[in-house]
Length: 293
Image 1 (cartoon, rainbow, N blue to C red):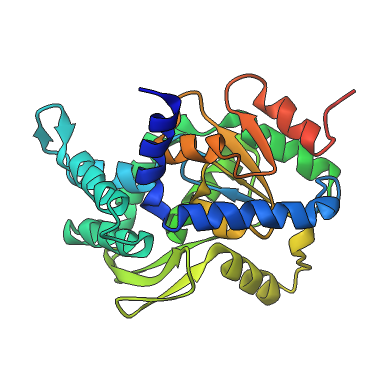
Image 2 (spheres, rainbow, N blue to C red; image 1 turned 45 degrees about the vertical axis):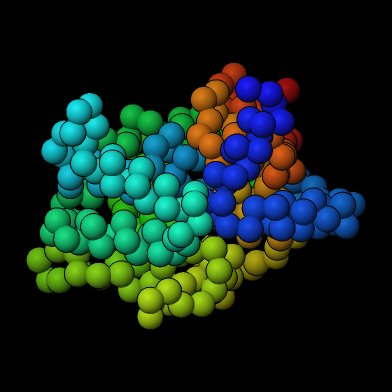
């Protein structure tokens, strides 16, 4: 297959986050206009994506695999459900927000409990990127900044991640933002209260909030200083492009990228691209000028 056809095929599937071509053009135009103001030394906020960035795995996929463990050939029912939702995204018959809602309702249907989140975390934990965590530690030592964990997955799960990071790796995020779920008094999931998505608005009657809006609201509530010119996003794909259009962005590039990750790297939808394999920590610290001399 020619490179052109390869990219065209990936770009077609890249509709998983919608409006790829329009968003990528806007991203490029904003970078040209703001280039003189884009530096990485003066920052006050660092936002880190969770699925695919902090972890080399996806909480939604792992959760479905655990709650739907029955095997069909060599795949679990959970994996097949996850792939089915991605297919609907790729063909444009579902939005990201609808997919987040559907995925959580599949978990709710199986009576998922907060205790089950611990099973998800246990399976994901070995895939955490320790070099990224170490780099965040060093940046925090040198800079007075707020470091936020942001995810389209549940904020409740992200808080569990933060607690475990603090205990086992000696690092913590100042706060977390994500999709908000509801639970009964016994800890069983009862629904979705608010979706962290790509556009502000409503999906099936449930409020949707972007990461950028949630971030601004968090900082206002905490009475923390916030400036988009002093904010850096670390992510793995253009699933965060709506935020990346407004702030400095570092894209982590895995050796074996998913479709979305491959397209993100191919079109250079970030200010800096950092390969996951090969001294990732050193490259990140060099960007922030934190590398030890």
